[in-house]
Length: 280
Image 1 (cartoon, rainbow, N blue to C red):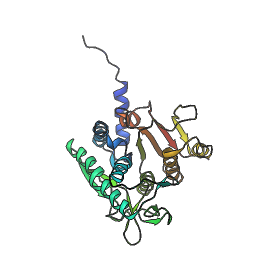
Image 2 (image 1 turned 30 degrees about the vertical axis):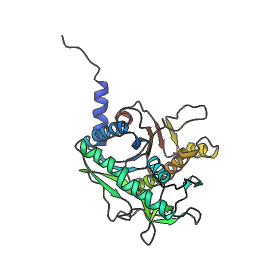
Image 3 (image 1 turned 90 degrees about the vertical axis):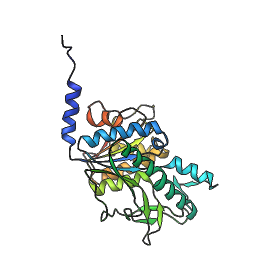
Image 4 (image 1 turned 45 degrees about the horizontal axis):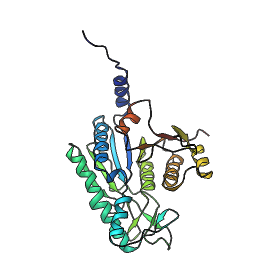
């Protein structure tokens, strides 16, 4: 006797997979995820499934934990103003080294190990993120002014893995916030989805619950009443910037949850916070 099974979940996945074939997603991977080998393996498997579904993928990664560790080893104090790291010339050289030759390489190697084509890209090398200096106090910290796509185009065959290093007019490397880099690049590429992979379940309300969906007006309210603080405040502002520039869908997901990307993208259940532009 053949056992009857509920085929609804499979049909649901196939429906969304067909809808998203040929679309472009930008994933921003937080540095906390990239410090855990098991999490990297899990996320890479999700990325493989998205690629197999015909989704064009661009990855922008952080690396704050690895950077903090490297700077501490070189006895460089981690000081911040307005949530941005004060960056000396020496610190900038170390930050670039960590992002490009350590974090980026680990992620690219992991993707290749599971049969994917992946290319590591330093944003500085192709002058992807032209910047102005944030302030004299901050040192080598950049504010992204534009996105230069003359030397970058997403590929349907290969996954682009970008280390977010800004450049000034003279080509000097600058430290930029990876969330803003992902936001600006997503808008420039007009991606179909921007997805932030973090170590949080989404955007939290003051009572500790997680918002399943927010529009840009609600995001502004959460910023103004200080519901979002710290790293999530910067992330929320980056999301709001993308929505204000006509990006339609931004997701915040917890990368610690197994198959979180697949659950969020290919089912209706939702496992994080979906942010959308306000209708008014």
